[in-house]
Amino acid sequence: MKIFEANHLDPHTYTSGRWLRHNNLEIDARYITFDFDALCRRVIELCPGATSIAKCDKKEGGFNKVFIFTTDTAETVVARLPFTFAGPPCLATNSEVATIKYLQTNTSIPIPKILDWSDDPSNAIGSEYIIMEHAVGTQLHQKWPTMAMDQQISCIDAIYRKLKEVVDIKFPAYGSVYFADISLDSASKRPLNKNFSIGPHCSSRYWDCNVGESRYHHNTKPNRGPWDDLTAYSNGLIDAGVSRVPPVDSLLHNLPRYHGSVETHLRLLEFGRAVINNMSNDQRVRDTSTPTLFHPDLHKRNIFVSDDYRHH
Image (tube, rainbow, N blue to C red; front, side):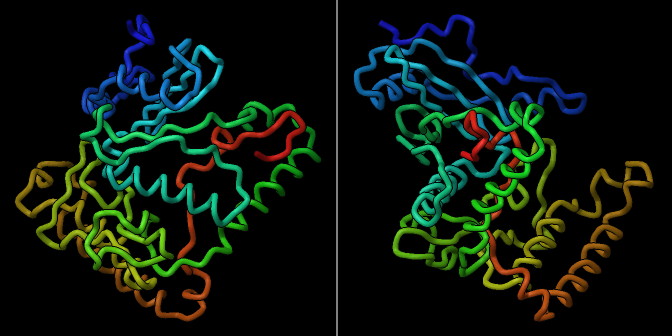
């Protein structure tokens, strides 16, 4: 017997919008091949007493395909599967879980508990995934228009105080947070503590995973970190830009002049490298540019508040 009848739900195909440019490529990039029934079974196993899925809502964001499951025991959990264009799924999943657990250990930020996860696509579900508790409260996006000004100010102050805990954490290098035992060579990791490390930046900026955009490494090798100082981090940004410039004998010559030439793009990037390297050698810049944990998608839809508007 199936534990959930997905009669009107296509769990694999992206159904939340269309694009004027590269529509088929964008949709294909958001298609995830996995065993939805296996995911449902895993959710049931994680919810004591549950025997079936009563409801499942699919949400599709900028980084993940999200399923909100409600079991027959009225328990709600969230399963998230990463899109490949958001970064290498294995690294991105490991990094997200490690970052959440690191923050839960070192700050008072209330983050939903992770119930299960895997960064190995050969698992029974067939994809990297994270299953976690459903966030308590209501999206700030929904509450904000009805809040009085003093409540809005109080909310902003609460958010600031939580984020300050993150800003106050000291990191040994620039990159992404991972578990210490992640399968990376020693040159690609910097120890954070016995449980966590800093490794390559898993943002799509540094990887060949952007929809309709290629990477070219004939001029520079991949430079994804971790980076020990601001100069190295800055060079990583410039190298990421260089990797998007195609060879001289490419189709770029057939594009309108306003696209610029390969030589012009490379020259501009090297000008930028010289400027940013010079700036990064200034101690005042270094003092204000220490490695800081940054949330790439922090907005009102990702912040939850309680009915009395205290920050969750």
